[in-house]
Length: 435
Image (cartoon, rainbow, N blue to C red; front, side, top):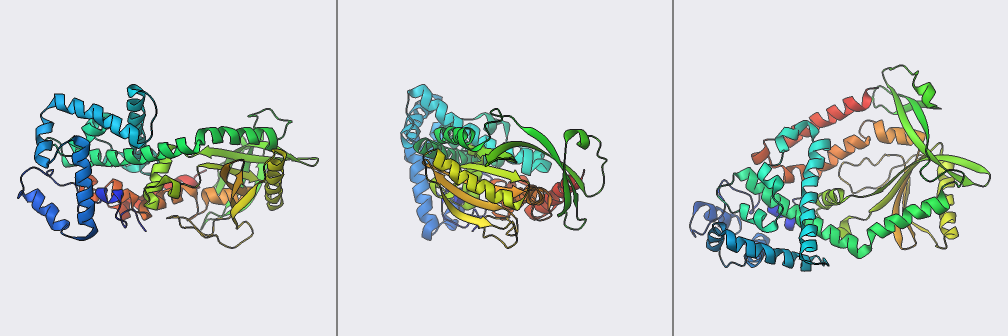
C-alpha cells in the first residue's frame, strides 16, 4: 500500500485526487470553474464524505460558515488575529498540551519546525541532488501559525506551489502534533534516559569510562559486480593512515565500546538512537498511517557490530543477563536471524529481504527497544552491498512508498520520479564505491 491508497488525511495532498491544489483556490462563487471541478471529482462515495468532513472542520476552525466568509476573512487582519488566538487554544486542547498561552503557542509552533524539518531532511540528504527543485517557498518557510497557513491555501494572491506547500505544511504539522502527544503519553524522553543508564550501569564494561570509545578501522575488499565484502582486516588508525586507495577497497571507522562476559572483554561498535520527530513523520507517510501508536514501533533502538557470529550470540545472552541484574526480566520479540543465511520478512518499501543481521525487539523495564546486531562482515554489506546498502534503501523507500510523489507532485515540482530515483541510486552507488 502506498501513501495515496487509503482514504485518510494524506489524500488531501494527492494531486490526482479530489483535493488537488488547482491554479486558483476554491471561492465563494457557487458555479465557478474551480468549484465545478471539485464537485466533478467528489460526486459520491468516500471522497464526498471526506470532503464534507474537511470542509466542516475548516469552517469550524476559522469560525466561518462558507467559502465566501473565508474571502472576507482574508481582508480582515483584526479578525484573523482573534481567530488565530482561538485556534492555538483549540489545538492545545486537542493535543493535550499543558501550560499557559505562551507555552501552548510555542509547542504548536514547534510542530511547524518539524514540518519544515521533514522537507529539509529530504532536500539535504535523500533528494540532495534535486534541492533546487523542492526548495520551500520563502513565505511558507517563515509561516508558523496554522490559521495563517490555512488562509494561504485560499488566497488567490499566492501561487499554486505556495498554496500546496501551505497545505502540506499544515498536514505535516498535524502529524507532528500527534507524534508529540504520543511521546508525552509514553514518556519516551524518560525511557530513552533510562535505556542509556541501563547500558552504562549493566551492559558496558566497568573498565571503560562512560563514553570512552576505542577507534579501529575495517579494511575491506569488495566484489566488483555487487560490492559484497570478500575479505576484511581490523587495523589501527596508524595502519589506516598508510593504506593506499584501490578499486573495490573500503576503509571504515568503528569507535567501539566493550562488554564483559566471564573473563573476556568483547569490543562492540554501538549506534544508539531515538527516532527524531521528522523521521517519525516520514514513517507515518510511508506506512500510510495517521496513528503513531500503530506505525512507529521502533522509537528506541540500538545497532551493534561485533567481530563474529558467536560474539553476536554472546551479546544477546549478555543483554538478557544484564536485564536480570537490573531486576527486570527481558523477553525477545520478533526475532529474525539471517547472519548465516536465509531471508527475513519485511513490509518496508525498498527493504532487501536478504540483508544479513540479527534483529529483535527487547521488552524490559517498561521499554520496548529494537536491537539490530551485525558482524563486521554483515555490517559492511549493510553499508555497501549493491541493492542492500542503507543509502540505497533510503532512496527506494521514499520513492517506492509514493511519499516522494505525494510531497513533491510532478505538476508543481516538475520532477519525473522514476527517472529521479534511478539517477539518485546511481549517484549513491558511485559515492559508496569510491575509496
